[in-house]
Image (cartoon, rainbow, N blue to C red):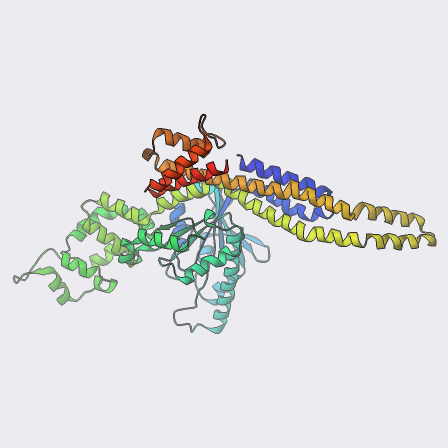
Length: 552
């Protein structure tokens, strides 16, 4: 199957139909937009609540510090990232204002949109979106849209100035609407979710899902961010991600635990690990455990506490050379406490820096996110884009069916009345005008029979063709996904079973039953297989094979 060609063919049929359909011209601009979208990169939106770690995640994903990260809550606009080179390197940020004006600004301008003062809030409120062109391999295939966060509060005590508060909440209301619009119009979405599948978190996902009739787990991935924030969560991050994925399985394809901040810290400080490890190893275990309890204990300068931690036995001698408060501050630098604590613990408990780096890289887990994006979005980009367009086509056809045909019938009902009215006024000497009016009515107003014929053609040539194309597209995508699963457990199958599944799932072209095989016999074979297999991947493949044989 060629998804692009099949979708383009259907759009051609719709255009041919609209050419002879009364009033069809009003759908032509939308149809033209869909044709353009068919050949554009997929749009991947990143959505999440305020302070969910979207900026850090975006920076880690692209490997560049494009989004501002800080303690302050960012009054974010919509930020679009596409492949290319900015026309002016000194002013690389394209700003599209609400009034339609476009300006090009510096990176400092983008950074200035962070804060809660009234001037900053008003500036952000006047911006529609920011656009960046970046030479990044990921952006060759997709356009990333970083959406604003939702559900913000003003300050920790809620006592901000009334004017600022009103501006802030007006902006947040706008951001919530914009985020829903972005995710509903995107081809795929990455949702940053918290580590617990709360009712609030589920409602957050549901509100985006409800804005788009096509949004399913097929095109949505969850990222459980900031797993380094708690040591217990860190140790159970994979189990917790699986739990969240099960709880939100209708909304998300999978959930991946990540620490984008860890990824950025590794890029900055990998070279410092040998020195850090050497200094940390000087700290006795008792003192190290005390330091790692919390930020306050790490920064203690109480001599009685430090003496008790470093001295051994009754001799009063130090177990090792003490590490001063200044050295401890220097080690941490500007790292968030949770990140530094995790790095420190791993370096302290690991023999080599290389082993520590690999362990911390696994905690960051950004490579896994890139792998999932490659498999779920980039490799399926044609499917995702075509599926999105076909769902837009379905909306258009529903509109024609419900509204346009209804209007045709209303006009048809008054056609006879108009004919009688014109004929009655022919005696007033306006014969030529009357004949022209009658001719226009005959040409533009369809009879009930003509409308019924149009409806039948509409149903056969467009509606049925659309559903057939959607079914074939979903079948194509299901086969692709199962072929991915098959490759992940290839060594577990016999060569004979593996080849049969490759042909059945369309690896070599259309779905095919191997020569000499009986469909019923093979269906029974794979049914029995599915009952005895324990590996969930192999079991799913056997069940899918049974399903395919059942519809052949």
